[in-house]
Length: 414
Image (cartoon, rainbow, N blue to C red; front, side):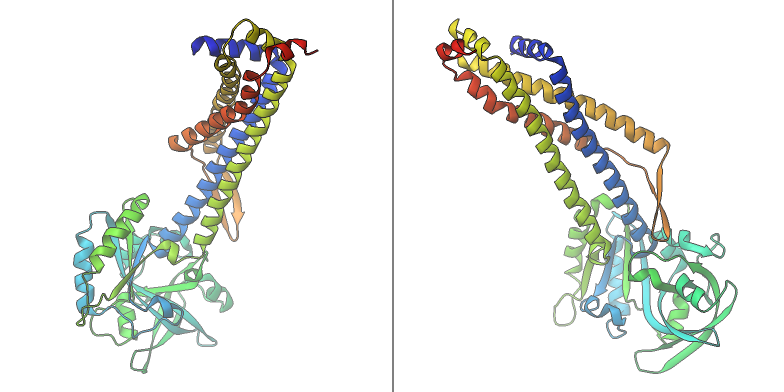
């Protein structure tokens, strides 16, 4: 095997220009693939982190039927106090959960004493919300980002309303809400801060203290419309979701039917569709890489067979077995793939290191995205194996043709 590869390497060096050109094309394909995967993965991770850290959390628990009517923020589909206590016990038993935020979500009217509009509100415990959605604090564009996230009597409002109603931090506004029984309640709030918008409907939500939300809704017992969960490791989400779903099946009503639903961030955010498109584009780029390698290597090997027909005939005439001739040409394809993959991986790692030292920043909507691409060992190995495998596969047909040549006909070739 080693002797065959040495002969293959010697044959490649006889046609150095063509060999380096082919290896260069393979290298370009590898670099394009790895850099695209690294950049796309970085963009995806930034957006997922932004959405989960500043708004959704990694998982959410709702009462069955709530998500079907979530746009209306129904007050008759709350998680009751008794069920909420049982849910907290189950969540506390799951070691993969880092933080839990119990939210009261309600629709209200917002007034600056001159104009009125609708607003979606989240009643939260400041410390729990800060731990579950740590990115929420970073969205405060006006107001103090330090200290408690909220205090009773304060409200965080979306930038859309702040700009439209010319409301500033420290101004007093009025929030009015209708409770489950249909009665209206209102009170004054002081604007604690203004929130930058973010992708998805939740980017237009305001936040108040959970005690204020219960007061507006005249809610005596602690209830919840939504329980948001943050995991210690988002990569473990599928396993944790499956384990929690099994736990929640045990929380049943008096008829013995499960009362709660569990949703991950993908089911709650429209960005999940963009993430799927990024994954699909990665598949297409892989296909393009395969095409580059196949065409490049097959072209070189076909030319090598055509130019060395008399040489092949001589090898066959002196008794070289067909499998040895086959091995010579497959070895050339293997070496081309190995050269292209090795150089491509090295160039890609150098480029990734450069972009981490000097991160790419570009506007995305009203935000500035910072990309710091990463390449996992698994991705590098996958691409390298794919390239080498395709190079070998592309050399099989020309190698088979060379090994099956008639020595007499080959020697007559001019």
